[in-house]
Structure formats: structure tokens, C-alpha cells
Amino acid sequence: MAKVLFIALFIFMTTIASFLITGVATYLFNQMWPIIHFSIAGSNIVSYLSGMIVGSFSNVLISFIPLFFFAIWKRATVSTVICAIVAMNLPNLSSIVHFNHEFIIVILCSIGVLSLFLSIKTADRIGGI
Image 1 (cartoon, rainbow, N blue to C red):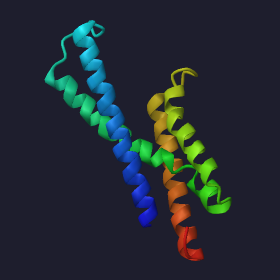
Image 2: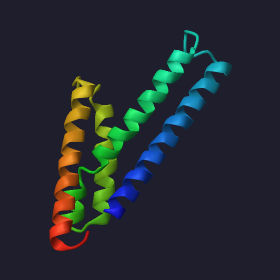
Image 3: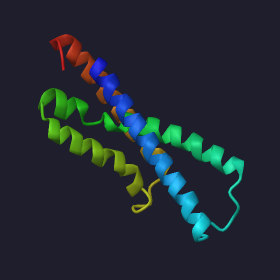
Image 4: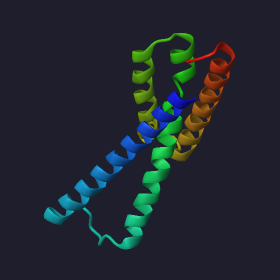
């Protein structure tokens, strides 16, 4: 369980850092070259920060999708990491294929929670991940 919590915390903090770097870079670029055609108010920043936390949490859940199949059954570390990176980017592709973005995130988070639950139950039964 400690390994899973460490991985979750690492993914959450990395995603938060990515959101912050992207937000600050966008703000600075907007100061030099106006790319956003409205003034950035405090409400915009608050909504960005709340979306950052929700997005980071959903990325953590989505990243656990390959945990059960690749990490528990196959014991394949590289495949688990690559599949997790691809799974975290799937919601970004929903706009290309015209799917509902929130629906895709809910489905992927549900699959991630199921995979996490099955992984923990299997590890408890077998005796370790």
C-alpha cells in the first residue's frame, strides 16, 4: 500500500507542477504577446487552480489503469509506465474524436479505481506487489 501511495503522490505533485509551469508560462507569454483577448481576473485564476487540483487527482486515478494487468499479472514495469502515460493522455484525444470530455474522464477514473482495488486485493491475497 505504501508503494501505491508513493506513486500516487509523485504523479499528483508532478501534474501540479506541470499545471503551474504551463499557467505561469501562458501568463508571461500573454504579457509579452497578447494571446488571450480578455483581462485575466482573480476568478480566472481561481478556476484554473481548482481545475488544476481536479485534473491532477483524475490523472492519478487514470494512471492506475495498467496497474492490475501489467504490474500485478505480467510483472512488467516498463509496459506499466508507458501504458499509464498513454492512459493519462487519452482525455486529451477526446476532442479529436468528438467525445464528451467529462464522460471520458469519468469512465477512465472508474477503470483506474477498479484496477487499483483489484491490485490491492490481489497483493493482500498473494502477499506483496
